[in-house]
Structures are given as C-alpha cells and as structure tokens.
Image (cartoon, rainbow, N blue to C red; front, side):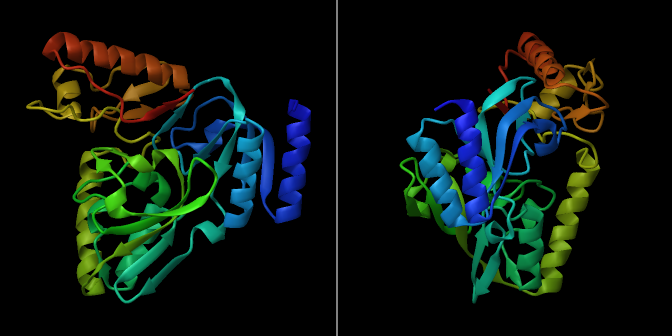
Length: 304
C-alpha cells in the first residue's frame, strides 16, 4: 500500500468514526521542548473503539505507529518520520471517576488534572507527583516518581496489547522499576487506583509544598524535556550533581542550554533544534565520564 492510499484510508477512517487526522505535521507542536522534525501523520481517535480499529489497520498493513502524550520527555529528531503518531487528546481518554477509594482515569488525562481531581475528592496518593508534566499514560510507562511513584497505588491497567486486543493487566502482572515499566509495549487506555481517604485541605497543602519545592530547584517555567539523564545506579551522586560538579551549568550548543537552576535540565533558550540537544547531551556525558568515570544514561526518550 503506497503512501497516498494510506492517507486516503486514514482520512476515511477518521471521517467515519469521529476522529481527527493531519498529515506532514511539525512535531515541535507535540513536545515540551518545541523542537523536532515532521510526522507523516498525527491521528487523534475519538474513543477506544476507534483507537482499536486504527491500531488493527496499522498492524495489518505493517504501518509503524507510536502513541504520544504531551511529549514531556520525548526528543524528536530533525527528520521526517514515516509513521503515524497517535494522540489520546479526546475527552473520552481523559475521563476520571471515583467510587469510594477507587479512582479510575483515562490515559490521556494530564497528571496535574488527576492530582487536582483526587484532592477534590479527598483521595490521597498522588501528592508527591505534583509538578511532573505529561499524561497518566506516559507517567505509567515511565513509572514517573518524585516523592512517590505513580505505580504505588495502582490496581490494574486496561491496555491494547501488541496483538491489538484489549487486555486488563493487574499490577502484580506488570513490572515497575526506576523510570521504566513493562507497559511500554502496550497502549494504555485507563488505569485503576486504590487511594487513601484524607481531608482535601490536607492533600492540597501537600501538593502545594511539593510543587513549591520542585519550582525552587527545577526550571519548571522553561521549555525543557524534564530530567535529561537518569541517576546512575550504585554509590554515585545524582546525575544533576555530577553535571554541576563537572562545571556544565550554562553550557550551550546552539539554542540548547544546560539550566543554571538544575544541571540535569536542558532548556530551549530560543530556536534550539533537536540536534543541538543531542550534541549538548554528548558533550555533557563525555565530560562527566572523563571526570568521574560515570556513564550517564538518557532519561529522555530520543525517537528515531
């Protein structure tokens, strides 16, 4: 099937089922660093049925695809991606419900919205995640954490698996570790959590304190992709401290700048390309290795 046939098929699929699709789309619009190349297509399905049908079509025709959320840790290269990026932006993927201490949320919900919703309903367990950008789906795939991990209160996850079938995965059947989970090979639809009942005022205060602490230490107001490198395993300093001790605060390649507030963040100071980021990461990683013998592993995901 040639590219024009795929275009027509995707247009027809979206028109028939209520989704939205665009072609030759700049990927700078889909990540928090505002950089990247061009996508053949970005498709936003209207519901789980449409998403399942879309995935079946893509798998059946050997078309590469990838689900993206807010792109808060995705670095798209400055290239053309001959694949379909799937965006769970429709309200049907953002629904949140509560029954007693059980909270269910769609994967497309922003993590900040989920934290606010849980506080409003007197449910504690997400306060330590305040200030982390992105969607719930991305947070689960990467096991996002700060003062707690998003997987701590998890009961189950509903996904579309690699075969294109809907499956419910209980927490004990999934694997979670530092900045990763076994859910990466799936498309997350929604997740169920068992929360703890507390006063909304107490929860909001804890959220506020966590956010203020992050704001003081991290450049949350800047265009970044979050922490660039993972903290190294073993008896080593955190990545940010290693980078700072290597004198890398303020280092620049093109429009990419290592933050003066936290050395494990690269800021788009204006007009930065993805290549600028990759080159700056290389410079920073090499210097840390030469000075301390520590090989830093990227925490951001470089696509392509």
